[in-house]
Image 1 (spheres, one colour):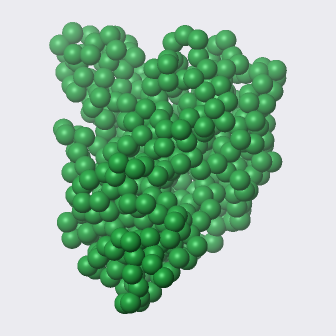
Image 2: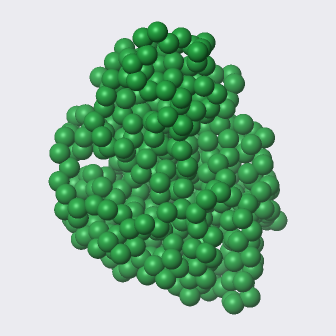
Length: 495
């Protein structure tokens, strides 16, 4: 038999968390069809891995690539770091089901301009992704703030019963058309007025459909634990799996709180399906939020609509130059984007290493000076935190990027290397692997990602992108598992 693609002599990390093993991996069409020693096998294309690591393609569970997978289908920031699938629609903001007649509300403006919101149904969006044929796979959540934008004349209040019913109808249609579930961004000013009573029926609709609920918590600062409790309660009553987005202890006054937050997550996970995602940096990035303006941390402006000349400058410098307080300077800069250096390294490492956490980049592809996580998050976990700091075994780091993510988001036959699974694969050289993106030069491809295979086709090889893209829209067709996670609450992760 002649295979389509044969990868020889690979150190296979199958995504399960088990140690690597040496094997050949054969692919026909879109799927893996054989794994093992195959010295006499032949194929149309043969790649000698030479002992490099072969893992499932990385799954970025927290992205804002909604419109970019259509406008820039090459998806260089993701493909070059070994990502084969992105989950879009996070933090309550999604490109569908949305049609806007005027200004794009904050933070939906992170996704693009007015002309980018042209998908009144989820099916319209999914079909547009397929038509664009991105280089990677796309799965999508529906954003709560995006739903609000379609039915409310003002964000500065709770939705009425009639408006909630309208949002629920839009959500249910999207779930039928293949949406993964619902996301919320309750910390943002255009969603913070939504009480639990507004969220409950929407989350319950997701539970009935078999989807997942992800949330950017109402408070990631001093009120973190209360916000986590709100999320657990809403998800438990809605009978839906929960993912807490980018779990962190933000603000200098809250550093050192990761143990309590993770303890609360562990306690909840023994009674309901609950996980979190995390990015491997101590700075966050979003639109410029007046509620986060403080002189306790460094805040760098990445873009400003009224003052584009102030991009890439510290807010403190801008305020001093203008002779105004920080808050006044921030008001004058809006709408704008910012990087907030508001976390401690120790807290972040605790969250990243925890068995209930997945890896998500939370990169902002439309920011002209993005946070380096857009290009470097996944290699940074493998190279810096696993290889160099030995925070977790390499096999565990890969599990957090692959099988755990696929299971929590219902991505069937993805995130694993086994016979019958889709051939989404990443080949990397751990010895030279490095995230080269930093805060000064954030747009930089990682070193050491040698090859990426998407749906059985080579998408990226030795720095070159294939002209033939093979990604697609992954519509949810099955119920996402709600089984309680099995883990030892205080299990030590050993290298």
